[in-house]
Amino acid sequence: MPTYDYICPENGQELSVFHAMSVRIGTWGELCDLASVDAGTTNREAPVERRMGTGFVLSPKSGKPTGFGGGCCSGDGCNC
Image 1: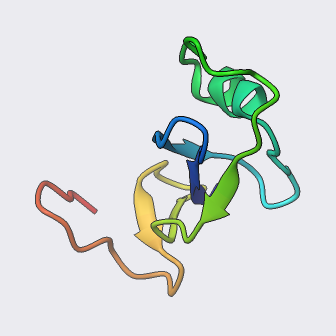
Image 2 (image 1 turned 30 degrees about the horizontal axis):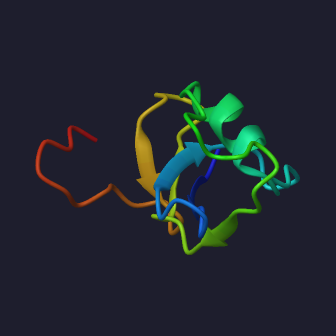
């Protein structure tokens, strides 16, 4: 599944989550539920904006992150 980054303009917080491409997240509450974090004092109905994600998906075979091109991720600690 791809990684998506979202920002909440109301509180300035950014969260990264994995979800299917067909999933649409529109509110802070939905995002917090998906990320398993507390919404805090921010209104759960506050809109969120999806940002460009990191571009990684989990390999069906290994469960490890791989780039969209099918190659290995290129970060420190990557054991692809």
